[in-house]
Image 1 (cartoon, helix red, strand yellow):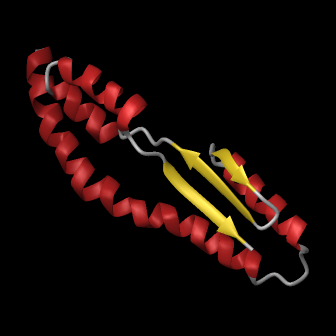
Image 2: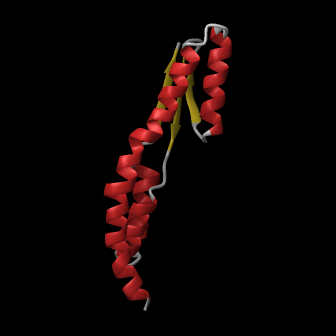
Length: 116
């Protein structure tokens, strides 16, 4: 029974990777872009307050601040892909180790950078 489930995990993972996750990446980035536009257009905030709001936004979303100056801030976050994990489980558990190795050592983190 478990082999039947594993056989179906690979195509289900493929579907979610190509038709759900990849389609949602621009929407995810748009949240940060809209926030940046909103903060930049707010004339009542000083540059220090803007930088503080950018930093709060990154920290609330689980980003690690890797570079911060008075005029820019950069955050990074690794995003676990559940569809790729499902595909790797569908490859009879060996793929899980391959995916986790990819996630920890080779995957590039999602980077968000704000500048004043």
